[in-house]
Length: 396
Image (cartoon, rainbow, N blue to C red; front, top):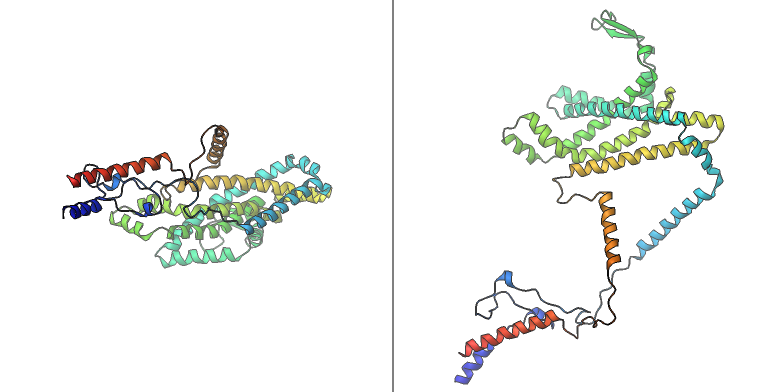
């Protein structure tokens, strides 16, 4: 009977094989397993299973997926890019010497400044008026809501060229404008001729601004509506004033949805200034047209305009990236890296790779599944020692 009791205690003290042990991988300590002192191991003291390096126990190797379709499309796209770049360099009809001659010409630079002025003035007025219209659209007043809706509907329906031409020829409808008695033409306060007041620059600015305001209003309204309703209810529950609720809670969160679309509109406005050539305003595209009508160098002069528009768009795109990154704070856990940070990270990675030492030929071979590593041996020794101690305690 004593021998049977001893064998039962020995079986009870033997370690229970785990999933790792069944696969031939020793495990240091399992949760709840008794330690050398007899106490159960805490969950935070349990060591992770130690697996030997090398192939899997079944002798299979992990093979990455080969994306053949992606590689084929990439090769085709790379070929087309190289072919296009080669044609730019090999085809003499591009006339790059003419392009270089007129790219920094004084007339072109003056027209570029005028284009930027039209964009800046029209953008500021358009988005300021668009913000007012967006508030009207969200207002509970039926009059303000309807007035804003009709404004947006009208200016989005009429082409931009038509709007500029109407403002430029407003003198045909109203020869004089002024202030005086309402519903009459008695301008006893101030009166001036319309053709003198509305020059080509003024007509272009008014047309671009009013046209831009209609689109900006919908962008701003959509951004405000994108704010979670719970934020507004929480702010109202705290009895915050309406002004603080709008400028400190609603607007910063709405800006994340407004900024990308707003920059798209500004970039479109830069190129939209090219339609003011209809009123003979010497902006960039109009100046390029005048030059190639004189020298008959159409393609190189159009390239001058295209490259300048691309430069402006690139600058605005970079500004858009940093503005979006600014407003992303609080919405994401980690801000996206800037191009400078990416370049530094790539340079550090390349420098680290250059500093890596090649493995010494005299060093012992790397461990495989047939030769257990030092950590594996240590884990096995620890489990054996724990088992032996438990057996000794049971016998006692």
